[in-house]
Length: 305
Image (cartoon, rainbow, N blue to C red; front, side):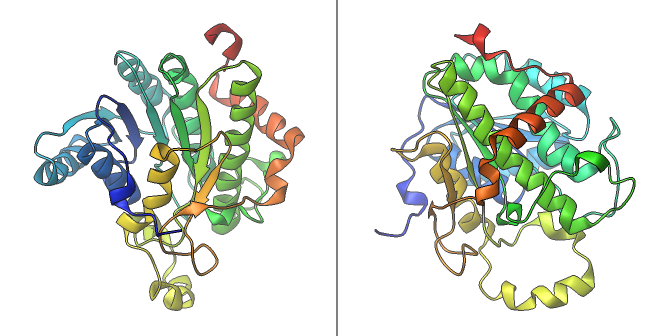
């Protein structure tokens, strides 16, 4: 099978995509390619300055691109609600890419009091998806793409210490948030199928990519990662699994995509497998119920038929 590349992304003319964290890294390159292929792209970013910078860079490559900034802070449930209200005014929404994330910061809390990595990487996207799901379901064959990480392998949900008040490990909390992304994807797909809806939920991971998400990595840890930098994807290469998940023909609900080489660290994209523990339906349901409780966002898919 030939290597998957940007040229393999089919025309997206007439489609609308919403990409969170679209001002930098994998989110930027995902938004760029979708725009180059003709999609209207909504860029979910915290600040207007960074959003406009991304828009101008995309316009240099695709002058006719239709781009719109959606103010979005995934560490703030009120910001997510406002962003969702704006997105819901769009005529249709074909693609949602839940890409934005934070990795390995010192312990901090979101505006609503959640541990930052779990709050942004999982709860924020859970709340966003739930509040625009009606728009997605109302668009034929829409896709929800959750960007996870290979770090989900070995992850677990610390139900007895969600906000890391007892103990905080940057790595374990990142793993927890990325594991949650996979559990969320699988349970959402299960509900979509149970309600005979043609929207699908899929997931992907970028491998090791040179993006800003690693800005919080401690300097001592960077020394250990030095060999990895030799094979690391660029952000454009890291976006390929996301683009495959969002646009490739033959994608099915609950599919998972990642790089092809070096233990899924780098190079192109293809279908890969998640950790077997992520298929635990009881755990997925427990996390789902907890997420609805914490965010106050309910997914009533039965009403969306």
